Length: 393
Ligand SMILES: Nc1ncnc2c1ncn2[C@@H]1O[C@H](COP(=O)(O)OP(=O)(O)O)[C@@H](O)[C@H]1O
Ligand SMILES: [Mg+2]
Image (tube, rainbow, N blue to C red; front, side):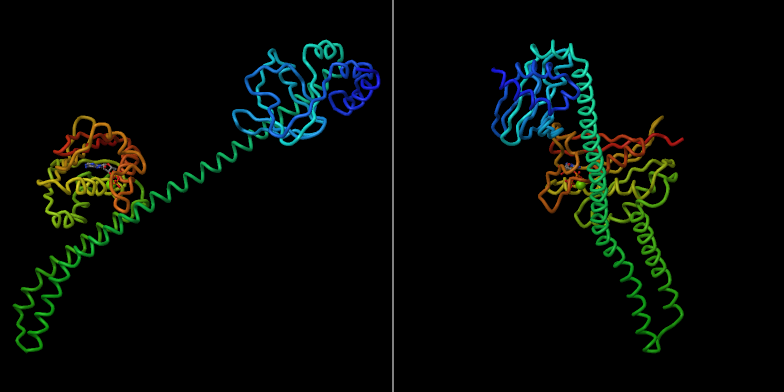
C-alpha cells in the first residue's frame, strides 16, 4: 500500500465514530491493516457460533444482524460490527451478519488491530460507546418482540374463550331440542284435558267431576314443565353465579331430567346408582351438569354399534373424595389414546359430528375444582370415566 492509498483509506476511516478524536497517525496505522471488501447481496459476513477474528466497518450498503434466525438490527453506512467479539474473550460470533444489498466493508483483523487499540484510549472509549449503543438497541428489539408475543398470547386466550363459548352454545342448541320434546308431552296432556272439557261445556254436559278429574294430571304435567324449565335455566347460567355448595347427586338427576328422553329414544338404559348420602361439593351446578352431559353424549356415541346399550351413573364417597363414575357398554378406547382424547380438538368422529372439545372442557372444569379425571376401558366392552372431587372444606 503506497502513501496515497494509506491517506485515502485513513480519510474514509476517519468518518467512522470508532475514530472520533483519534490521532491521525493512529488512523493511518489502522488504514495499513484494513482490507476493503465488496460483498454480494445476501452474502454471509459472519456466522453465529463460528469464529471470525475481524472487525467490520460499513463503507457502503446494509447488513442484517440476527440471532437464532431472529432479526435484531439493520446496520448501514458508518456502522461497525464485530466489536463484541473484539472486546470479549473469544472471537466466536454471537450473531449472524448478512448483507442486504451489495455492500462495501472495511475488514480489520483483530490480531493486528488489538495492539493499536490497546494503545489508544480514544479508540477504546469509542468502542465502549458503540458497544453500549448496540446493547441498548438489541434490548429494545427483544422488549418489542416480548410485547408482541404478549399481545398474541392475549389474542389466543380470547379466541380460546370464544371457542369454549361456542361449544357451550352448540350444546345448548341440542338441549333446546330435547327440552322442546320434553315439554311437548306434558303440554299434550294439558291440552287434551282442556279440549275434552271444552267439548263437554259446549254440549252442556260438563259436571264438576270432569273438572276435578282433570286437575291432577294437569297439575302433574305443569309440574313436569316447571322442572324442565328450571333445569334449562340452571344449565344456561353456567358462567354466572358464584360457586356454591351443591349436592353432586342433584347435578346428576338435574342433567338426566333434561336429556333422559334422548337416551330412551336410542334404546339406551340409564342406570342410576346414587349414593344415599348428600355429596356436597363447592361448584357451579351448571358446570357440573356440562361435565355430565358431555360424558353422557360421548357414551351414547360410543355405543352406536353395541348390542347392549347401557349407561351406569354411580356416585359414591371415600375418605377424601366424592366420586362420579359414568360407565358405558361402548366400543372402548385403545390404551394409546387414553391421553390423547383429553387434548383440545382431538376427535375420532366425522367432521360435523365431533368437535374434540368435550373432554377438554370436562377436564378443565374438573381441574378447576381441584378434582381429577381418569378412565378405565376395555376394547369392545366399554369405558368408565371416573371423576374425583376433593371434600369441600
Ligand atoms: N365413552 C367413550 N367411549 C369411547 N370413546 C370415547 C368416549 N368418550 C370419548 N371418546 C373418544 O374421545 C374423543 C374425544 O371426545 P370429546 O373430547 O368429547 O370430543 P368429541 O366427542 O367431539 O369427539 C372422541 O372422539 C372419542 O374418540
Ligand atoms: Mg364429546
